Amino acid sequence: MKTLAFIALSAIASAAMATGPVSSTPDISITGTSVQFASLANVSASNNSTGSKSEAFQNVASNTGNVTVGGNSIQGVLGVGGSVTNTASGSDAYASQNLSSNVGEVTISGNSLQFTALTGATIANLSSGSNSKAVQNIATNNACFTCQPTKTSNWPN
Image 1 (cartoon, rainbow, N blue to C red):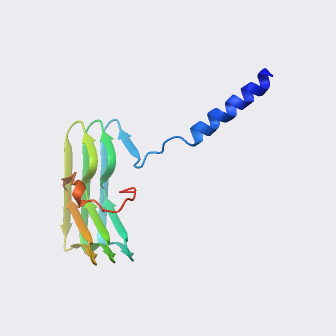
Image 2 (image 1 turned 90 degrees about the horizontal axis):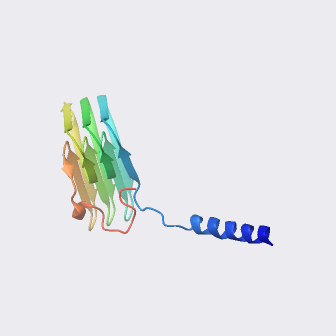
Image 3 (image 1 turned 30 degrees about the vertical axis):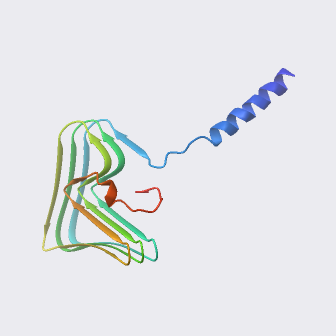
């Protein structure tokens, strides 16, 4: 009888753990120095999404979401020539482009250096269609919650 009760309790505990709450945004915690760097020659970094409620997220050497860095953070993008483009088209489309940027709930406990240096390059971010949004961040911090998509998705994931 004790064995049967133990098996039943184990099954209930397993079921409770399997149906527990799931985080809508992943937590990224870095305890120390974080270095993100992209060096691009004859650049062609493109990200495109089409259709109603389409989303195009392009992050180059960026932190996005719920991120904590417990120390220094260095983010940089270097590029020569070419283009970096991000487009989303359709009604309620959302295009978010971030180069060496922090976007969302990002906490850095220390110094932060962000730089983007592009020569002979074009940076373009486009969202077309009714109620569409385009947000572009270059070597910046952005905690603008009204800049996020309005649909009920797991932004930015």
